[in-house]
Each structure stands twice: as structure tokens, then as C-alpha cells.
Length: 88
Image 1 (cartoon, rainbow, N blue to C red):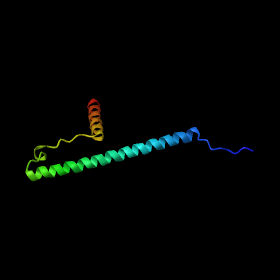
Image 2 (spheres, rainbow, N blue to C red):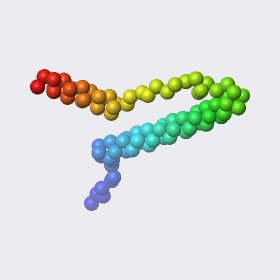
Image 3 (cartoon, rainbow, N blue to C red):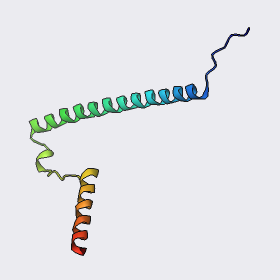
Image 4 (cartoon, rainbow, N blue to C red):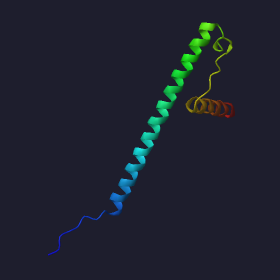
């Protein structure tokens, strides 16, 4: 009588690939997050030095809000509704 040898099937191979891909993606995401945090820390330390010396660039800059996808979609919906109301 022959015993069954465990041979990975297509489903388990695909699952292993997905898990490997997900682990790599998570590791890359974590590296990017750490890099961003490091950049924020470096920027804040240089801006503190600028403020102490009185050469801050932030004082003369005005913040311009950048619309995100949700607000753009909302504006488009409102515009479309206005056009429909004008036609009707």
C-alpha cells in the first residue's frame, strides 16, 4: 500500500505566492513609513533651527488646499445635479 506524499497543489502554491507578495508589500510599506517619519523629523529639526535664527520660510507661505478625490467627485455630482435641474 502506498502512502500519500504531500505535493503542493496549484491552490497552495498560489496562496504561498500571495502571502510572499503581501509580506513584501507590507515590508516595503513599513520602510516607506519609516523613511517618511525620518524626513519629517529632519524637516522639523531644520525648521526649528530656521525659526531660532529668524529665517523661517513658513512665515511667507500661504497654504493652498489641494482637493482630494472625494471632494472632487462631490463637486462633480453637485455640478451635474445643477445642470439636470436647469434642464428640467
